Figure 1: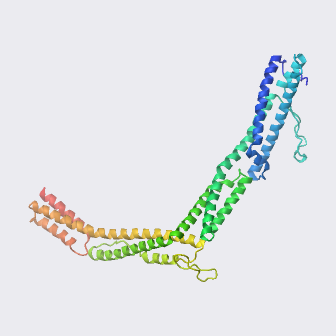
Figure 2 (figure 1 turned 90 degrees about the vertical axis):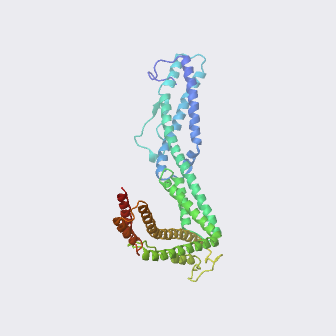
Figure 3 (figure 1 turned 180 degrees about the horizontal axis):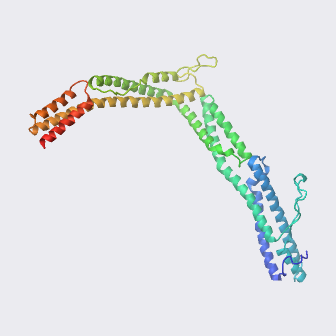
Length: 419
């Protein structure tokens, strides 16, 4: 190759040629290593062999063009260096002609990129002709193409690294739930739907990782965890059903006792306290007891007849039955605890009315004792104030609002008389 007039400026010196060749050899080796590493990348190999679709397919089609350009430029770049090394290696002393040719190879547009010769259906009639690059321009073009391809690889890798472990965890949760469900001897339609969704998303991620397939992974993982917990809870209920049922029965007994205490206390308050707004308390012990009894009812068979009783008394020992029973038992336990809190709270609020009356009685007597100590016991106004408060507090039903005002008035009267 003898060069091109005016293409690369004045000829280089022999020392300059040797220095440039050493730098270009190192550059070529680094570029070759980087491109080979990219070509061996697991994600790139998967993209090459997978049946891609959607957004990933569109991005990969463009990346393939960039990858082909990268290889074509690298081959052309190597070819120019090989030619330069051949010329340099064939001459111990470089003459003007050799220096001119080497200068053109090393600094001129010696890198030739042939026109696209791909499938005819992808060509254009007036497509681009031969392209020429200097070695520096070829390196810059390779850098851009390399960046485009590695960018896609990094995006796909990031999606798979972020999403697939969560999907694997969801599959493990669903698998553990399935194993427990087999022990219970039944099925769960929700679990089946979750398993199918896991496989659907896995298939989407396999063929289109840059699409929308991964957006539901967190929801699926949460659903699988909830289903596993539900089946685990059902298995636990099956093992401890008898003790938990008896504990719930005892809790409902406490609810019934608290509700009876509320009725007795309410009757007492109605006779002793004039209160237009007493708390209401719907009876919960009886309906909750009926729901508890329903847990032990035989599950209906497919023909409508009662099914066989399971261990410990409950009817129907299938997995679905235990899932339902676990949910209902937990719901009944929560409802019974809430009913007990409400009943005990209602009793306490009624008792506060009686305690308020008794507190006012005690305060009135304390104020009376103070009046005696101050020598004001015979004061007519104070006597009338004391009598009015006393009558209100010892008359049934007691008007607590008026009694409170009367006791406070008596206190102020004592303070006024003593001052």
